[in-house]
Length: 263
Length: 307
Ligand SMILES: Cc1cc2nc3c(=O)[nH]c(=O)nc-3n(C[C@H](O)[C@H](O)[C@H](O)COP(=O)(O)OP(=O)(O)OC[C@H]3O[C@@H](n4cnc5c(N)ncnc54)[C@H](O)[C@@H]3O)c2cc1C
Ligand SMILES: Cc1cc2nc3c(=O)[nH]c(=O)nc-3n(C[C@H](O)[C@H](O)[C@H](O)COP(=O)(O)O)c2cc1C
Ligand code: FES
Image (cartoon, rainbow over all chains, first blue to last red; front, side):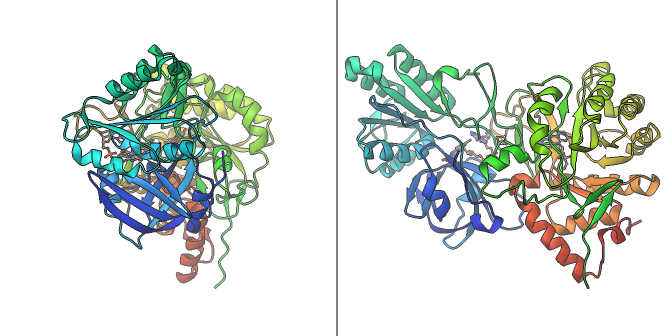
């Protein structure tokens, strides 16, 4: 794992951009040390700086984009920790610890089939851009509940994306697993060489992994877990993988589909 | 006025009175992730690793964490690799830390405390032992033996018989009268008490209205429990003649001053390490500054001032 800046005042990062993107919120920080070494699929632990004791702990956010010395995250407000993050204003300072976690394994060569559900698309944007930049064949499918979330797909800049919504208000009216079946069918025999990169709600990831298996394709999955430390200290963020509990923060968040046990 | 931050805890010489709480700071994991060189510049005055048990424990099913109002509920379930792996893999590396090492041990059966203490007694890396008596106990149907004064005394006595090292017993607040447990531990040979472990609690997921933790109930920590901890430290240190390590909700230098004044000789930081893994660095600086402002020459001078 790469090292990160660790002096307390070094990761007090100023916010330079904070705006709503449909149902989500995009925040950009100046965090040069993190930007310099971040890899797709890694995450940061972020919290507004200052003495406020509620929310108490930072929240894990996938690294959505890296531009020069900027790190961007895309936040879906679902509870107190994430709602507070959407209040970020330009000039605010945030404590940003990272980059953390293993990130996706980019060493494969087959077609990269990227499958995202909801805000799970956030870390996949950095992945898609990186893979496309390396000349790898990339196919992207993103599924959302409805239009107000799906508009965030505009944040995928370097690659074409197929979009679907459950209610048909943007893109196809379908579940993302249906798009995935079409994509793998379309690849023909190359599907068995393809590799899926999946991030989204549990049920969606499970369906995608099942489909990949039917086509003989490998899959890497980025899981979500409740975290406290983000660095492997608390043993709180475990998922069941390879017959044991593994910490999503330092043994993940990316796992091979084959080793994950779904609950 | 010059401030001398040095403190002593029994035979342990501490650079300052702030140490970490077991299970909340993993120096081996943090050293891999943080750029700071923790083995030269360790922010705490002593290091307490996560509790290890006689046999490895897998821990509880997820979710193991849930944040509540200014607090954190956890049900880690003492997941650890067991004392033998700890001795073989971790101890040699932890021995290189520039501060005293306080090993935290637990067992599912009372006599396991004696065996764990015996396994560590001959190890020079270990300066002191802390008995975590909040481990689920087989003799008590999975309840913590720290809830029962007789089992607490028995576990303490067995550890005492197995080691000459400085012996700390860490009390659980989940009892009717914590003083009864404190006395039981001291009479059975404890040299020092750690006060407090987490407070029983539970949370429901606001959407599903089902228990938020996989284990249903868990232990509450963080600022939400500070008043509970302060009271326990105050009552115990006023009554008993052993040093107390105070902990529960410490996030600032002022909190440290309060715990010292309530009667703690040293103060541990737990959950706040998750807000910022290097919090101790700024906290200790601020503590020194606050002592200077308030004309307090040594931490010892403050201990018990609120009594
Ligand atoms: C590695 C990683 C990367 C992540 N990346 C992003 C990202 O890029 N954008 C984003 O918006 N979110 C991301 N998340 C999820 C985000 O961290 C959680 O939504 C957040 O911690 C919830 O905090 P809260 O205080 O708002 O919610 P809480 O009040 O704690 O909970 C509200 C609801 O959300 C659920 N919840 C809490 N934590 C999580 C979690 N970690 N995953 C799923 N559900 C949770 C709770 O069970 C509850 O139902 C990521 C999580 C991980 C582990
Ligand atoms: C995630 C987590 C894990 C913990 N693990 C242990 C442990 O292994 N052994 C132990 O004695 N106490 C453990 N504790 C309790 C703390 O050491 C401390 O007593 C308690 O959290 C109160 O302090 P705090 O409010 O500063 O966290 C744990 C606490 C948390 C939050
Ligand atoms: S969040 Fe603490 S171990 Fe993963």
